[in-house]
Length: 183
Length: 280
Image (cartoon, one colour):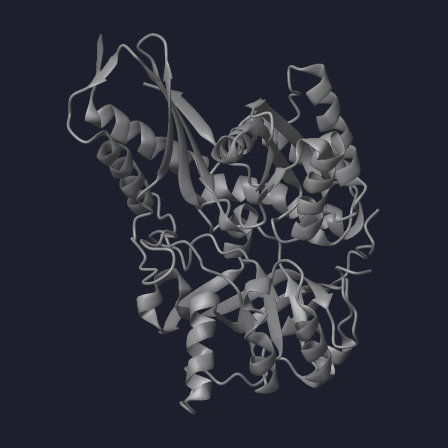
């Protein structure tokens, strides 16, 4: 038995995220994400935190934004991006509370998060979305454009600004303490 | 004696890698469809996406998963097959290199694990396990292995006194700890016996078996069945959100071992259980 029922209702949301929208999102909701999000995984997170610690401006303003934990395959000719599904989020756990404290509002990834992250999501009123791991071809169809904006030397791990259209995800951890991995 | 040419290896490896990342073996695909029918709610929604994903990957010629892995090759090499075109490993790696370039695969291999971690940019070197066989045939099985599931794998040297219970507990504990991280529904490869490295290779090899095919030894087949039941009662479910199916199969391979040892390796495979094989 799935712990939560899909109601068949998909909630459309737009980035940047506002507190008002975040408060309405509940664990188990199916959402379609629209607008810009930023990619970052292990190496880019390490760089972002180094910049913050050195008081250097970040390549993008975190306020209200969503980070998507993804390292896509190269775009074949005529496509915006290659396969682009989520990577394991817990590898980013040690960096996440700091980014949330600076205004980051959402994350898209796969797998459970650590206790510190769950607490920070509640404290800073944020949300963690689960996308389907291993559905990279399907998810790539919901990415309209991709622009590399920082750390090109990191290859697949560089920071890219993606424009999403009806990108399917599940609210996994909400700002009210709801956690799909525990219910 | 039969001569094996460099171009035969290069072209075969390239094709296997490019095909493997775009289409699942039929048995895996069928099993995911069965799982879709059994699940409900959000778990069903996830499986629906996985089934759609397979169609889109083929249509768009885009990899099923962005983690196109580190390529793991099992090569059965006949004693009567000879290679005279120089460095054999280089031939395999050239196939990998071309697949990454022409198939737009992700470069996911770093040259040194601790210090530089510099990306080799072409997924070389691949990991090859050679097995000498009779005759002059050369059979290559290529499995792109992603890190999401590989990272959740584990190996433990049990005491013989821990026996069957020890083995079962370790497998269940490994799957439980992995939770939603390795992209369930997973396939659980278990290698038992041999020694430290042998059980790890057996666990990996177990993943190449057709989904749901049992071990030929009835005692081990029974253990596979029991473990699968227990794993599917954990309610981890697709992507860890809860559901009936956490694992599609448990495959055990075993080997004789030392009187003082009971090595067990658990290699976890995500639902994107990609592998292809060909003979040269």
